Amino acid sequence: MRDYLILETRRTLRDPGFVVGGVAMPVLMYLLFTNLGGDAGEWKTGAMVGMAAYGAVGSALNTGGGVAEDRAIGWLRQLRVTPMRPHQVVVGRALTASVTVLPAITAVLAAGGLLNGVRLDAWQWAALALLLWFGSVPFTLLGLGNGYRLTGQTTGVANMVANLGLAVLGGLWFPLVLFPEWLRTVSAYTPTNRFAQLGTSVATGHAPDAGAILVLTGWLLAFGAYAVLSYRRGTAND
Image 1 (cartoon, one colour):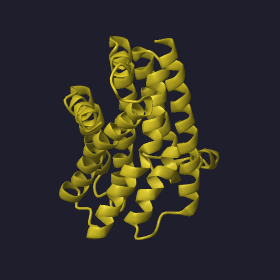
Image 2 (cartoon, rainbow, N blue to C red):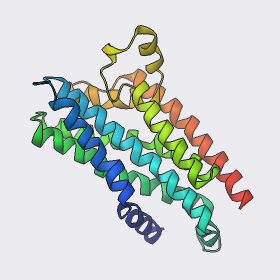
Image 3 (cartoon, rainbow, N blue to C red):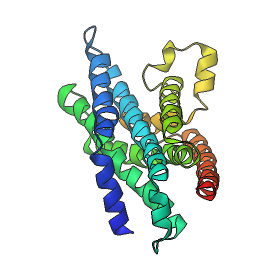
């Protein structure tokens, strides 16, 4: 199990697409959005949380692309003849994704602290990173579900649509005050909005809102069920 986890982590971190799309892009977007038009004030902190969340979601979903590629080349069939049990394969993939989410989060937080002058207490930086890390699990399960169910090409499209759609609807790119009222209502039920709220609460010195935890837990269960059903269907068809 440990060797499998190390192998999958190395494969992901060596992928140029992951480095560019999952780490570099959120940092560049954060610096661009917060340094055009003069002093962005408090927006630099809010945008830092939003872009760190956006990078985490993209990296988590990216796991699904790797799963789809593994199905295409027969890697999953190879794993089935090893002593590893099916649930160990799924858990190993989920743990790999949790590791590869960290570079995206830390890169954006570092850009906020070192380049944009965001100032938080030490405990806030640590709590912010941990909450965004653990809170990305639902999106990992969504990516795994897509990877086990869809082909490599359609998994890439589905993940891209999910990433961009959830980022915009969840208010990761722009302040929610810019949204019309009906869209703010919709946004409150998206997993990305509640995911970012975990970090925003800590950045403003407050504990995470119970409503955010409740909604995100609901999405965790929904995406988890989707991943399990997709795994059963995908492996049955291989």
